[in-house]
Amino acid sequence: AWSNNAYKSVEHRVIANKEVERFSVAFFLCPSYDTIIRSCREPVIYRQFSFGEFRQQVQEDVRNTGHKIGLARFLA
Image (cartoon, rainbow, N blue to C red; front, side):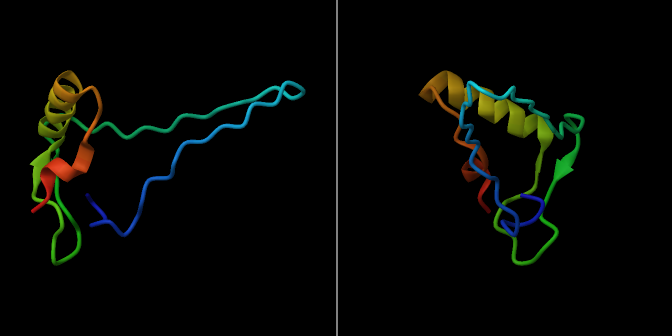
């Protein structure tokens, strides 16, 4: 949402190898719940929303549909 779709998430894929030990590094960005998320480019694709609003919507979507719908809920 911050990049207005200039940057896309990558699909997480892992290929298991029984011969070599695997190491993973996790990177997460979890701002405070009152942080406002808005696009830095015009025209905007997503409406402005707070991180708390996003988290609440994700939880509701998982509870109601069984999966995360994500940013599509915040289209402008």
